[in-house]
View 1 (cartoon, rainbow, N blue to C red):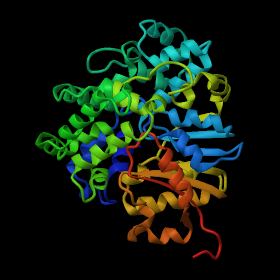
View 2 (cartoon, rainbow, N blue to C red; view 1 turned 135 degrees about the vertical axis):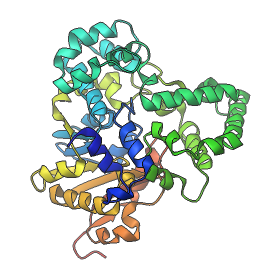
View 3 (spheres, one colour; view 1 turned 90 degrees about the horizontal axis):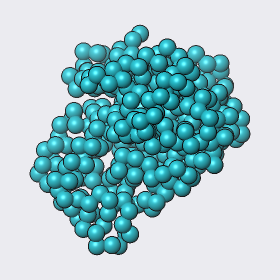
View 4 (cartoon, rainbow, N blue to C red; view 1 turned 90 degrees about the vertical axis):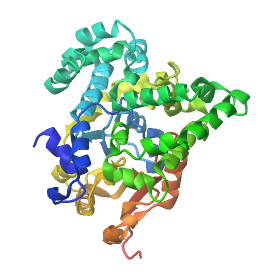
Length: 407
């Protein structure tokens, strides 16, 4: 099955393809491209909720690969990074190639942290390209719609690329038009007049008629990686412009920006600099040796997650990270996914995921039977939600097998 069909099956709202909407079909085409240049789920929140023992086997959706690499800090036995999007897997493979082929942290940071040096093109051709498999090499060598080879994204600001990077650039233009000082939002002290003025202007923009009109268009959210079904969950019973404003405020105003690299990406489309303070775990200088030595433990997989889990030996997996994928799925597909987790997971397996809204799909009437086998861990779910600095999700959920005899 080709990539487009895999993605189309993942985003459909029903087993009956005739019921899929035109927006579902358009999104399945759109999502084949590079959407995320970095993942927007906080791996440190994941690890805090999972509390993994050393030597664990983890299955995660890959996305940009930041999470899979960061999980190496927990000293796992192996990490399967599964994704339908070949562009995201090509990015993970490129990062793994960088850990294998670049000689030191300085060059690794210059390529993947800064992503805007002219000589990164030579680094790619001479050191990284020979380490890639054919699929990843073809992806980065291929020219985009402007006629530029994709590996050149790393010469002019990698985090400005991808669908989300372009969307954030569009948001920055809106902010400029609304005279919002993004630098003040990011770097000024919380109570400074400059930042308070910028926050008032953000509030005014999100509650304008223009914002209400803009957020009614499903295609607008494609660049955020949000398919039509998840858009409905995100809005719930509130106007979408209001929900997006609340999520943005949690992202930029609930955590100290000096340690929140998600805020830097949202407001500046870059990381503040090398070191350890405000970076994903895999980019931190003190963890570079650990990332490099553990790179061989990460196994990229191009497959539907349910199908992949079904191919594994029984009782092998310690943790499954679903990101927000269930927001895309029909109830029957979610049931099949949890059946696959049930078979491949150890007795102590933990499953974590995010949701656009606050409610877990397992708590809905359609999926209530799953609660006979699985129980939400409220304490670990709260830890994950509270520590997730990206702030863009409505819910964080951690599940474990229900004890025999438990109600």
